Length: 317
Ligand SMILES: Cc1cc2nc3c(=O)[nH]c(=O)nc-3n(C[C@H](O)[C@H](O)[C@H](O)COP(=O)(O)OP(=O)(O)OC[C@H]3O[C@@H](n4cnc5c(N)ncnc54)[C@H](O)[C@@H]3O)c2cc1C
Ligand SMILES: *[C@@H]1O[C@H](CO)[C@@H](O)[C@H](O)[C@H]1NC(C)=O
Ligand SMILES: *[C@@H]1O[C@H](CO)[C@@H](O)[C@H](O)[C@H]1NC(C)=O
Image 1: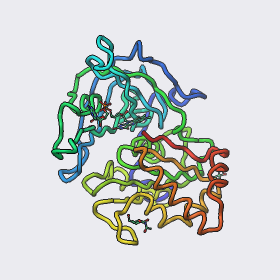
Image 2: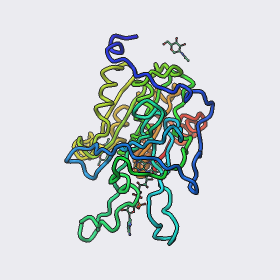
Image 3: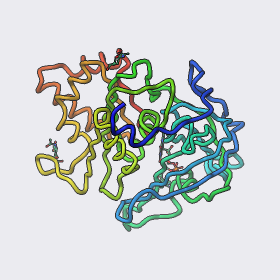
C-alpha cells in the first residue's frame, strides 16, 4: 500500500452480500408496479455562474431495489400524462451516480445527478415555465421525505467490467453523463470492496460549460491526490477555455490532446465509455476518425474491433 493510500483509509461497506450475485439485478420493479422510494436529500451542486441547475438527489430504497454501478432507475413523476388523460406520466430514466452501497455505504440508497430541463422560448429568449421538463423539475424541487416512484434497475451497457483489476477505463462525460463514473470511482477509490482491489488506470474526461458547472470536482480531485498512479482527470470548460485553434474547448478537443496515449491504451485493451447528451457523439467520433487517419489507421475497422472486443460502451440520451 502506498503512503498516500494510508493517509485516507477506504470506507467499509455493507452488506457484503451485495457482491455475491453473478448477474446484475434487472427490472425488479416495472412501470405498472413501481417501488415507492423516499427522497433523502436534494442538493444543488453547481456554482452561481453555472448555466442551468444540476442537483444531487439521494433516494432511499430501503435495500429493496438493489443495482450495480452503471445502471439506471426509472422515475414516474406524479400527475397525469398530458398525452394520455387519466394515465400516469411516461417513465424517465436516470443514471445512478452512487455505488451499490449508496452514499451512506449501507446499501439502502441510490443517488442521481439531475439537470433541470428548462424551455427557452426562441422568440423572447426567456424561460417558459409551462414547458419546463416534468420529471427533472419534480426531482430537483422535491423535499426530504417526499415519495418518488422508481422502476428498474435497468441497463447493462455501462456496467463496470471487473474481471481484471489492472484494466484501463477511459471515461468520457458531458454534464450529468458523469453520473455512472462517480459510482465507478467511489467503488474503486473510496470503498473497501473485498472483491475489487483496483490497481489499473481510470481516466476521466469531463466536459461542462464553465468551472461553476463542474460536477463532483472535489471528490475527483481527492482521488488525484490519493491515487496519482491510478487516476487521471481532465476537464474541458467550453466557455472558459480555448482549444488549440482558438475555438471553444469541448471534450473532444481534450481527447485529441491525448489521442496518442488514448489510442495506445485502446490497442492494449482499455475500455472506453461515453455518457451524456446525444449531441456529444458526432464531434467525438469525427475527432477519433481524424486522429486515426493521421495515424494511418482505418477508424471504421478500429471501431468495429473495439465493439467486438466489448471495449466500447456508449449511453447517451
Ligand atoms: C439511459 C438514460 C439515462 C439518463 N440519465 C440522466 C441523468 O443521469 N441525469 C439527467 O439529468 N438526465 C438523464 N437522462 C434524461 C432523463 O431521462 C430525462 O429525459 C430528462 O430529465 C428530461 O425529462 P423531463 O421529464 O424533465 O422533461 P420532459 O417533460 O420529458 O421534456 C423534455 C424536454 O422538452 C421540453 N418541452 C416541454 N414541453 C415542450 C413544448 N411544448 N415545446 C417544446 N419543448 C417542450 C422540456 O423543456 C424538456 O427540455 C437519462 C436518459 C436516459 C435514456
Ligand atoms: C495485476 O498486476 C499485478 C502487479 O502489478 C500482478 O501481480 C497481477 O497478477 C495482475 N493481475 C492481472 C489479472 O493481470
Ligand atoms: C477547435 O475549435 C474549432 C472551432 O470550433 C474547431 O473547428 C476545431 O476542430 C477545434 N479543434 C481543434 C483541435 O482545433
